[in-house]
Image (tube, rainbow over all chains, first blue to last red; front, top):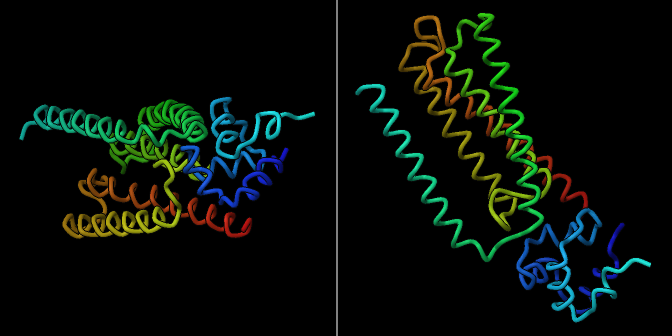
Length: 64
Length: 170
């Protein structure tokens, strides 16, 4: 399932996938895979993304 | 030079290579990417399985006497090349390139240079031997570079397919 909330949060911060990847210390392809729903990140990476985007884990990764 | 001296030199070279890669790898520790590491682990598994099956097939080919014009050592080398090809193609197709954050276009140029280099070496060796076969068999040095051309052509095709998919997505 696509992670549109993460994509929206990234765009709201005016960050490209490459910029977000550099801030989180991973590759651009990994950010792309997470947004497309092709990869389930570990909790460490989820936290890094949330901190960078200023969101909580619930905001970006919790599915109702 | 004696064969065992060459083998010892080869082993020393491999150990040096491992030491260099290990040192460079430590410097790149901050570029750790969990998804790429995971995919490379899967690629290693497929590659290792291919090597095991390939080795069995090559032993079978030798025992049955198939392809007598190819030296047994070249058959073993072919299994290693196929295994390496499986690893690299899996990494490329799953966005887990050999270097962290490595992009496809520079890789494309690098692989093209490798193909040209292997093709030139193969041509020079065929010319030096006066043909592809030496004593009725493909020489190891010529075969090595022909296998290199094959392997890198497969990689070039994989990178081309992946680039095509990327541009279609964009």
